[in-house]
Amino acid sequence: MHSKIAQIGLVSSHPEVYDPCDDSFALVDALLADRTKLLNHRPSICMEIGCGSGYVIASLALLLGKESSGSSYIATDINPHAVRVTLETLEAHGCHAEVVNTDIASGLEKRLNRCVDVMVVNPPYVPTPEEEVGCHGIASAWAGGENGRRVIDRILPVADKLLSDKGWLYLLTLTANNPVELCLHMRKKGYASRIILQRSTDEESLHIIKFWRDLDTLLEANECSIVEKTENGLPTESPNFTPFSFWKYGNHNN
Ligand SMILES: C[S@@+](CC[C@H](N)C(=O)[O-])C[C@H]1O[C@@H](n2cnc3c(N)ncnc32)[C@H](O)[C@@H]1O
Image (cartoon, rainbow, N blue to C red):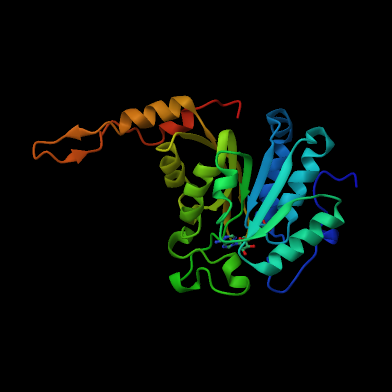
């Protein structure tokens, strides 16, 4: 197998498992474009949340290849059929990953606490009625509730717990998910961010955001949250917050 990414023809399928689509291809293209950085990053643990067919985690394993032989891979999906399909996809490509049927990373937090060097996520991001989120069947692959953010907003705190000090998160979002707000939210937790790929399809405008822990951003976030006492004694956040300044912060080598 010489390809640097998984071959669709070798990707297993199931009627209730999300087939690789424009969003999956955008995420893998972003990883391919970052391949040299990923190799230099020398990740010990790479993780995918919501692996579906296994196309993305298999592609990540292939693009890192033998040059990153110390890397191990773990993938999760809430859909048990996706776990089976991912295992078949990995096997067809000669790759290995631990694949876990769980909600986000439930049950893995202790073991993976601050251990994940690369995390990739193509979440359910489509704005839908709230009641469709987490339903059974294929709709749970895309149903994201209000602004498509229901699952994304649950994944980000988990990512913060699991990412190592040098951890990188690659997150796929849609314009409707408000990527700028997501970056600002993560900035308050000390993450710098950059949109590393933007792609418009007939139906949607996709962004791949890369997040990484950044000391300058963390210091600035701490300054911003210095609690001031108001006249009535209630704490308030400092107003010294410059929207969009995250674009110029952080190590741009990332
Ligand atoms: C848009 S699909 C992406 C699939 C695959 N990663 C890809 O890019 O082709 C989202 C995936 O997340 C899974 N998922 C949805 N909610 C989840 C949750 N709470 N925990 C884990 N996986 C979840 C779905 O079952 C689905 O496989």
